[in-house]
Image (cartoon, rainbow, N blue to C red):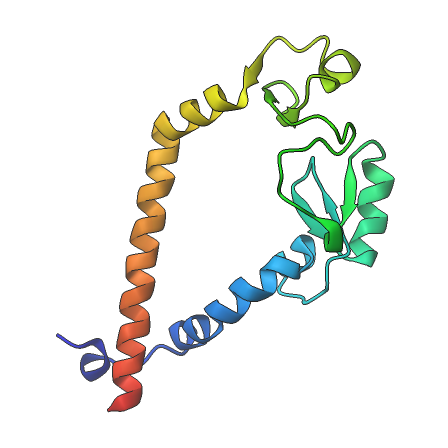
Length: 160
């Protein structure tokens, strides 16, 4: 059964599917807090601890609250495994207590009291084997399949 012949096209679905590619592209260079509020602002800084992009306005709020976070300009942002504080070191560990990646030099400076430091390889393996990851992966697959069906139905509706 073809959706477009059975039902009137839902304007919310149409608007959503029309904007998906634009939002995906925009989010790469967009301020994450603004993007989450459906506001378009160009990101100028990236916070490694928060793992978010920030525009100039949001950066002021972030900087005041999180003075010790590591930041970089979005223009120089690379997703290499190098530590923002110790540029010659790679991020080889995950600190469970602080929920962050760290290099060997970070450990004595900021993670001496941390009970659980895990190698990135072990952390990645644990995540991939976790039931939560499997649930999220399955949910994303279902969402993508539903989105593909909605786009296909929308295309068929437009052609009719």
